[in-house]
Length: 542
Image (cartoon, rainbow, N blue to C red; front, side):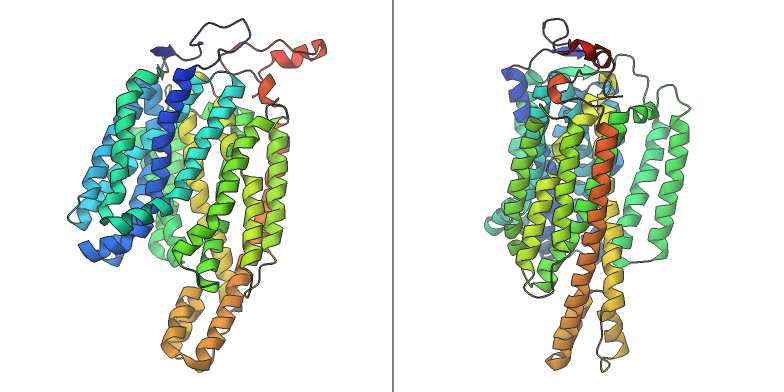
């Protein structure tokens, strides 16, 4: 079944979008599984890494590449793969990516050396970059009714979050029962099902007027994204250093060159005219900001539970299950509410609720602060839950059908970039607070004192070495300083959530509720109020 973008897939009354059938909903279920798998693979490696190191003898540098290369490659190839789907067919790219992901997973599972595992993880990232842009574009084709598309996006967003939540749980269970390579074998049944059922259930769609893929633009996009993300991660992890700083600047320079080339091409890799669509640019801004806030605040909260409260990573993951499940439930309610209430109001209200949660986090103390932390995080998750499914919905529903793959790739890339920026910048806020407030006992040697001043992890190592009252004094000061860093990050995030509420209200107030929203490529609905005819006839998403 091949769909020419912009045309309905089945007969419908004039002005009424065709409704999805059981085939589309079953196709959605098939696509949710690989979506979940991509986020599982993003997180499960952190649990498997000690086992990999013990078996393969990986060095500390190699361990970093094993962990990071997957995310680097996903971020680097998202725009290319999304635009490739627009040109040659989204189903074709999705199925090819699924097959490549399966093969790379097998290579990773049975890797006999560190270099083979790094190569396999890189291939997994490149293959993973084909999945989400293609899936978002196919959802845009399969669900033309805005209400159904909102529900489909909610379910798809659930699978994305489920991967984050279930990754540590499933990974821990498999590592407890099998060898480390077993975590990669999850891809075999999931991608196998996609490859078996996808050809029959999923429609093919592409841009019938797409030009050839500009390989020079592909190279420029990689030279922009990969060094930039690498620089951010290294600066967040190790602090200031020449190589990450140069990498960051190089990424920015190549990004400027990339944008200038896109503006001159008849068939660009990234159509910059998409950003002139008001709802799309607002939704992308929101996606960037929410990823920034949640990435940075999530890192600080996780470190607090481990370094201040002394909880194990498994215990941290278990405690975060409850707010994460609440986030999934509320995230599915948001599209239902948006059927009656304009999305801008839903997102603004959610952002303000999340801001309240951040205010609660400013009250977390260095002793007995775990309950306050979890309550604050729970409120943040409830408020931020609406952004997850609503921003990709707004991006895809406001995009011309022939550009759906490119829009889906930009939506995903913005999320990756936001997390990296949040971890780097908010991490620096927390680190700067820690270093300015930690008090190191004068009797410590200079090298030990410098280590303790660098981070709370360093202070913990030094305390274990020196012992006695000196260790207790150092740890008390380090925990207090780190907690103050968490409080300061929460203040910044509270302000950003208020800004996010203003952005959503101002940028999306022209967008009607899902029940009244026409989709690009579909005729507008007849307005219920004759006086609103002028507004209904206009494209409400531009």
